[in-house]
Amino acid sequence: MPVRSRGSRAKEGYHKVQDRLAKVCRPESLVLSHGYDPSRSEGALIPPIFLSSTFVFPTAEEGKRFFEIAYNLRPRRRGEKLGLIYSRLNNPDLQIPEERLTLLEQGAEAGLLFASGMAAITTSFLALLAPGDAVVSTEPVYGGTDYLFRTILPKYRVKVRFVPSGVDRKELVRVLNELKASGSRPAAIFVETPANPTNVMTDIAGCVAAAREVGRGAQRPWVLVDNTFLGPLWQSPLRHHADLVLYSATKFIGGHSDLVSGAALGRRELIDRIAVYRTILGTMANPFDGFLVLRSLDTLTVRMKRQSETAKRVSRWLVRQPQVSRVLYPGLPEDAQQRRLARRQCRGPGSLISFEVRGGERGAFRFLNALELVKVAVSLGGTHTLAEHPASMTHSDVPREERERHGISESMVRLSIGLEDPGDLIRDLQGALRITSRLAHKH
Image 1: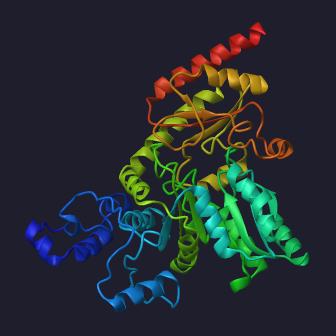
Image 2: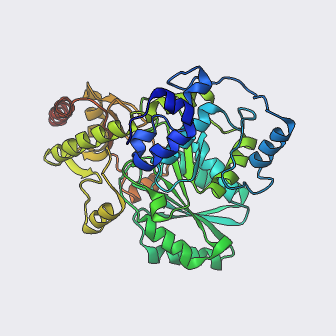
Image 3: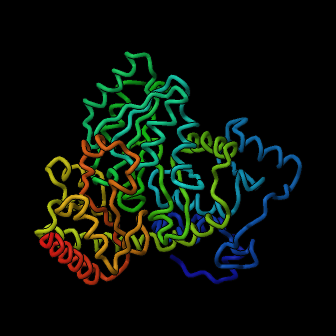
């Protein structure tokens, strides 16, 4: 790349420089500066927090144009940008991280930030569904999503059918056709992969193929993927032709356990449709949380790589422990089919490990209570290593028979690996397992 003076860069213009960099740099380099011109904020290297609720239009005509785009009143022209209007619609601290997320999410044309991961999921479904529609979802899924599907959507005459994580294309086609025969319109396939908390992977391309087999055009079910566990670094659902990628940005994207946010990414046409519902429902993120997401994107790649490397080491150690009866981790798939899928669909195994401690709930609780370095808390993807008991915590609102059917046992512990030294983590886990074993023998 030719060396250019600071003066020549200023003369050339920010956008031309960014366009040239986009042709030669990788996303992890571009994400540090994309979408923000420091000259527009007094030269500040980091975008300021824009707390303004409303923004001044250059002209009345421009104000009219902005609203036409914001409310989908006409098709957006090629290259046409939405100007700032009002912070319920857009804000620089939302637009900049949204644009940067599209760099990291391979195949995304546009994205939206939400007040939480559940806000992203519920807003997207409300934008895409109508009474009489049906959703097919893999299970298990996150407890909040499960509650939405079992309790809330049926009130709006949306039928939800569950299929096990790892479902094959033929079975998915059978379920979709069964819904059609019953008079429901299969409108969406929802996939959480790897599944929370069992880490079972589902074939995204197979789900897309099933959707195409049962419908064409407007009749084809949308394929929505919750990519929180592996994305955007280790898995790119849009590259496998999914329609929409959803995140709890609280987790790896936020990465510091100090914000709650969500995201949706996909084709511009679909994102624009969901954006109207976000505006009306008011489910957008606030400027300060958008600023925190922006801060976190700078280190997303290095954090996720470090966490994954540590998780590989910890999982291999856990497999050898006599007090651990089972380890569920994408880097150690239990069967050949899951191994093949992991190689085809993922670029890495991530940093979420589930495992079973001998002794049921009592054994799991003894283990959790004996941890010192690792913190007992829900959530995941942050800088601190966290451990929780899915059956009584994150998935406590899932019916017991459903939990048991999908392998969420009373002895299961979910571990989210952070940035601590791997040897220190293993030492803490080892100490907790020893105490658990000693207490079990006493009783």
